[in-house]
Length: 335
Ligand SMILES: Nc1ncnc2c1ncn2[C@@H]1O[C@H](COP(=O)(O)OP(=O)(O)OP(=O)(O)O)[C@@H](O)[C@H]1O
Image 1 (spheres, rainbow, N blue to C red):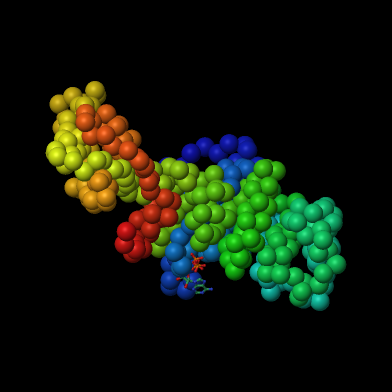
Image 2: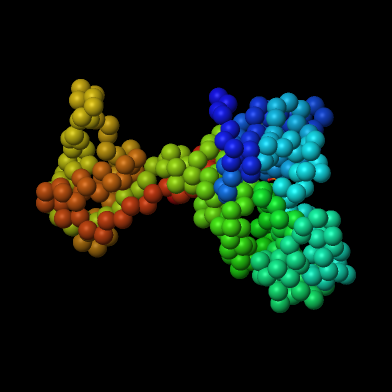
């Protein structure tokens, strides 16, 4: 349901309503709604071909919607081309760079397209390339080139930044530097739309994440919310002494009574565990693994079970990657 837009959203946010887009008779996005608040760092996740680039390019005004509307800072990006360039910037492809220009010359060239650009040396400092100002683009490392591309996007002081897979092809050190840069852009108040295949990056950086699958937004929320709602079962592991009666006490603890819900006392309490525990004798102890939806309840039951003497309790909750794989229907590896 459409809601009233605040003046701040009109100022800097992104509002997409009923968006359909595609190529020829191939419909990629069908009736998509999305609202990204000013200053928000929003991550778009989804398998290859899900439509992330199509959505990012339509928001940036590089593609026209078939149906629906896109507003960036209140502007229609596919029509208000002149005005939108002073509000929104897309990190260009590496092919937009000239290998024989230096990093500083590159930024000076792109600065000449704007009326009030950031000075090239300031951009170089922001993207961590001050030391490579005089290095020719052809001699920059992949990570440095990627940061220069973001610098090119920053030169026009955009309030909204679209970064399409900025960390692709970067090594772990390059990705870490890039994460620091993206975080600092958000901290300075830019609205950032980031597409990525790196779930750790999305979990660490993004205020909210949208998961796109076959052109539909199948989940929307903070990384924590998505992990809690969609990652599936948690696992609790502990050990107990391998002694007479231990397995019975364990069965009693895990299968025991759960307090009825205070709001629906007549409703049967849900089972504490999702499947029979896996028990492995190791030395003089039994190592127990329990799959469950509510690891806190299992930890409590095991800790307070009389005579069980459990120790080494750990709980492994689901991850954003597990949530993502469930949402997008990708096959999961065993274990
Ligand atoms: N220029 C184009 N012409 C025709 N079809 C296209 C074009 N660009 C993308 N497509 C198709 O549209 C669908 C969505 O592609 P899109 O690039 O938006 O997905 P994506 O989520 O960004 O994928 P990836 O993670 O691989 O970058 C795919 O089926 C793709 O083959």
